[in-house]
Image (cartoon, rainbow, N blue to C red):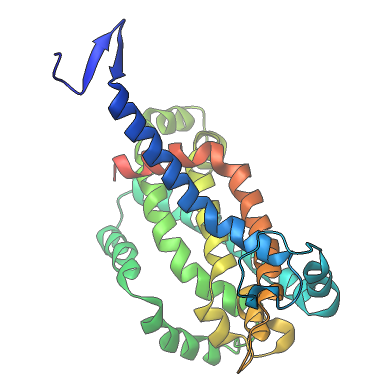
Length: 287
């Protein structure tokens, strides 16, 4: 064992000094690479206008909050923020409900068309967004939902529900069927069993579905650009394009907006991060 990379000592594995140093150096470099873009974004957002064009690299150059003040007070950013929150929260709520009920149905029941639904959930995840824009646009136009928030939510649900339903199906498969049988013995209907017994045990899976649905709607650009044509209907992802002109980009406003956009996503992550790993691993281990 003297030539092994690790040795057993006191019930624990201990690394040689060289291996430990290499490991820690790799972790430090990886952390710096991951943190650097975020740090640079924040530093750029507090620099004066056009300071990013300087030929000298300065981390701090008369830092101020002027970019944030201008974004919040002199642009349509608050309106875009409201639009994005409305669409993302509605997508999250509907996405969780539809994926949870669909996942439970295909996990517990066998009915005509069961295999077709499973294949449909799987196959719809294989199509890139670019190939779906035209058919979805035609469907929404026929329903009169172009430039309407419900139409954009429906477009997002076509992306979130198949993935989340498949993931929730895998999670419900890990919940013992005996719980459903106990509910039926107590006189609960199938929906009552699902609502009162299964859902309380499925918080990790629901957290993953909620997080995926929110992030999908929050950061999506292609559908929002194609389906929303009015300035008052822009979401954040589309609205940021207004800061990029034909010959010049307002990097101060772009970076300040990017920092503000990241805040709601970070808040949602912090709210559900306790359940994310459990939900992802449970849904992936059995399907």
